[in-house]
Image (cartoon, rainbow, N blue to C red):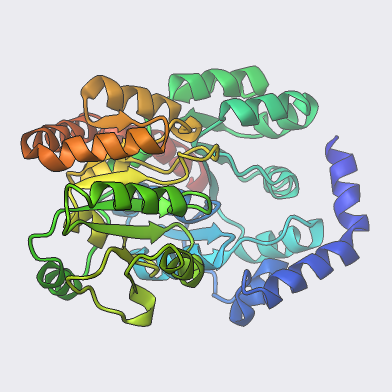
Length: 422
């Protein structure tokens, strides 16, 4: 199947070019760095050993930061190249990557672009985060004798079923990795079933991710604006969730007249649409990106800005995780737990199956099956500060118990890096 895929990417060159130009026009590609998507480098290769780490987007790239810090600390001569494929992740990485680490966009998976990329960077070791398998990129990297490690590998039940229909392709790709590390034992078992001999789980690196940052001045300003009002956060919401959230707010407001609901959409560019949608329901809405301030009359604050989720987790003691009332797989709950937040989530958390089970067992999260259940759970937590505090403490304890994973993963990668650099 790999030769067929390679041939298809060659023959589809005009279609790929058209698709990229369309993405560029829609703001989905970075016009200043678009050539990076074609394999052209915009950065000189640093001297000495270089590790290349690829992550798909925001969540995957952020989860790799503790590992990056550890690898750079353990190997003083090392530099690290991080690639991602989205504009948002590139912006965040420009702010968060430490010294000796830098970002480039991943080349589109055509052989010519991939070879151009590898010709320039020739990394000593390649790390792939979670489940981003681009066949040409994987096979060309292996062809050059560059050891590859799958880090925090995740194979969801849905992905597992899909790869079963392409067993030959995924088996070929996974067999080219020197080491496959699954997030969980279930992920490692699925990887072995799909063709990754010796796949193991050393734990989930996301447990070691530091708390999301927050600007102190913005925090102080919002504390003054929110005052002592009861409030809750709907984090990383998706289309189809804001209407139920608005109805939940209206219902709770009967018992909590000064209630403030904060919505942080997963995609900030939806902020204007969400604001108009909620105002059409008769709610008083303030939009952060439009510099609208919270007043005593504000029902819902739409925080449609980039990189401020940590700010709002700190400002609210209760957080509902978006992408979970709708069947899209849920959002990462660990960011909320790290900041001492009582977590609520919908029934659709398939992207975080094991974590969801563990959170329930530790008493730090509550699953709500639908809108009415969300309203009931929120009502209970708003009325019970002791329960909120117990859930928050349980979440922090759960996170701390799993935090040693980076040491284990960095030690295994370090062995390969030493061998590759010898």
